[in-house]
Amino acid sequence: MDNGVKKETGGRFNPYVLIGIVLGIAAVAIAVTTQNNIKNNDSAQESIPASTDAGTAQVSITLPGLEQEKPEVDSSKEIVNDVLLSNVPRADYSYSFNGKMNDAAVVTRTDEEGQLTTGVYPEITEDVYPLFTEGIDGEALYLDGSYGVQLLGVEALNESYTISFWFRADEMRDWAPFLMIGSHLMDVGGSQSYLSFNKKTTEEGEEVVPIFNTIDAAFNNSCEVRPSMDQKKCIELNDWNYITICVDADDASGLEEGRAMGYLYLNSELIGSGEVSKLNMNPESVKAYLGISCYDELFRATYDEIHIWKQVLSESQISSMYTAYINADGEE
Image (cartoon, rainbow, N blue to C red; front, top):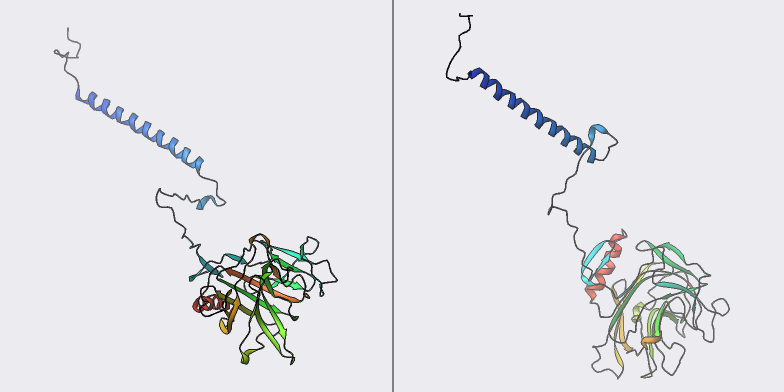
């Protein structure tokens, strides 16, 4: 008996059923992918640091090989006020102070308040604090007449060399050295060997400053380089001056044994030249002082930017140093 439903033979499959199965599988795949994306996003959000402004959070990504490289600084050249001087070699010894002693130390003498003495080496002390004031580049060292300073680490200057420094004097004493470097400083007539910058007064009462003085007992040499006759007094009190000396050990043709040529500059201008003693400093006993010696009176003065090279600088190199300081200081 026929109940109204016609049976098909041969196993034929309905096409609408197939479409439904395909759509179901696709829906499941989409759901799984969406869930995975949500989990990944949640993990990424947890790795981003919290921002003070949730609406402006930013992520900085640095790709390998694209890091910004810092420019290399040429350590073989001098830098003045952050300006690289491509034509000036880096000094062998530099003392800039800027509120710190670094490679320098306060020294005093065991005599009567820094007056003339029969001879005693200055001694390093921690009982006196150094003073600082406004300088050419940052802060400068101020000596108030009660102490001096020893520059540490300076080695023997027995060949060619150049020394430059900024100097402002409140007062000056005859023979009292602005700067002195040497060995066996009290072995007069024996093995004493030193250089110094100082002031002298002539028999006529005329001040001559600066004078570059060299003494070497080995060759019984004592020499001075003075300003030329029309520039005898070149330094005025309370003014900054840039003092430079160049000694050329190879420039000794026609000179006496144990002598070389020295060239004295003030504010990058050559003011005098002459014979100087070739030095024979003992490397084991070199002392370098500012504003103090074993004998002479102390005085009040300010120092800044001391540089020492174990070679001769040219006039253009000296001028480059001076100009760089002046330009940075806003002067013409």
